Length: 256
Image (cartoon, rainbow, N blue to C red; front, side):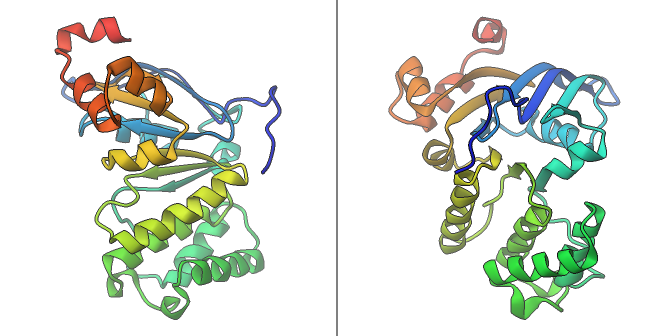
């Protein structure tokens, strides 16, 4: 397992992140979040809590209204930061005019990989995720589970230091879910920082070293699963989640 120097900057540092959309809706309001290198971090919250806005901002897909974001010390808008982040997004977004092999190779090229290295890495990942026989297929020819495999492979092409998984196992079968988590555990053991959002609360409880609860664009609780269960007097993270989300909106100030 790769060790992390105590002086190493955070894998992710978010300060005062605010995003106001047209029409006045505020998705995130002054959000602060810091994740140490090498951590497996879970971010839980209902739809509309701000998870997708946060992730989109970190990945430079959403333009924040205010705030600062740094990835391993680099401003999120720089190429250095972009090359350190891998994203397996919730919605399947694969170019249907490219083959699976081309999708992976072109992604590697975007992140500065030489074509030979990108082709080698693509072959490795296609073998790993059992996609080799689909290398020349287009995404439209694949099942939903196969498309999820491609998303994972694409996110890992450039060997990012921070892997962001946004609802990665939504809609896939139990066998594939187990395979993906086995691989993610190995990546994390090797030193990769993982940021996970999921509605499968048992996944977060079993995988994450730290869990934060996000509601109305703000973090209302953050700690280990054990500490959160103790603080909320709950038997599991599902119980923690239910109790935290049942707090009246007017009482949220007391939680942050």
